[in-house]
Image (cartoon, rainbow, N blue to C red; front, top):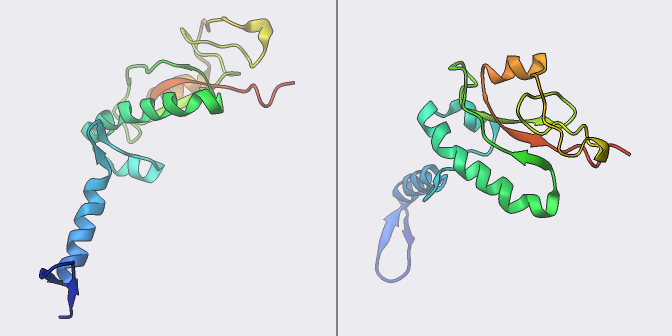
Length: 143
């Protein structure tokens, strides 16, 4: 095998280099806060424990970026209610869909501060499988 220079006198062969790179890639998704799951494919492939660990990093990212983006009306993670294939995967619900106990403002200043009283059927269906983390804004779409 052809050795690769690593600086100084240390040399490793290509096979070792690629194995090390692959291992670093696998652990690069794990931060001090927990695993970083970014795509739906990654969330689906992750164990329930890994999904639970990645939730805080997901919420932290939303909170760090939302000041500029203003995509969320409310971020308030709910307890997961199901154990299916989507169990523990976070999702947001658009502000125009009724959700019990969370801000449901329909993207309008008229309804500012309104709290939903019931869950829409789609919310009940998805919430039985995944974990609701908040309300997405529709401000950019409503005039």
